[in-house]
Image (cartoon, rainbow, N blue to C red; front, side, top):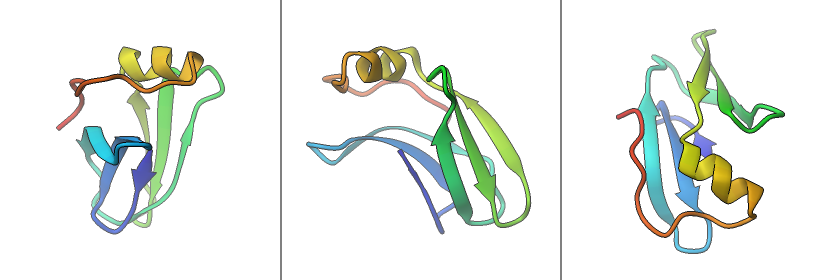
Length: 78
């Protein structure tokens, strides 16, 4: 998972370098991003002061529980 100057929250397959899902909403750069303790949400903080709570796609939740990423793209906030 990443967030940065492009203002996008992205979910990646680390090994393949493929972005499976991305979300937009911040009007400033994303300065912090974390999974919630239960892995169901992603919390992002932007330089504009906004804090967003995103639904973590089910496929990502299951893959993280299995320590593996999905084999194909998943739908996300675009």
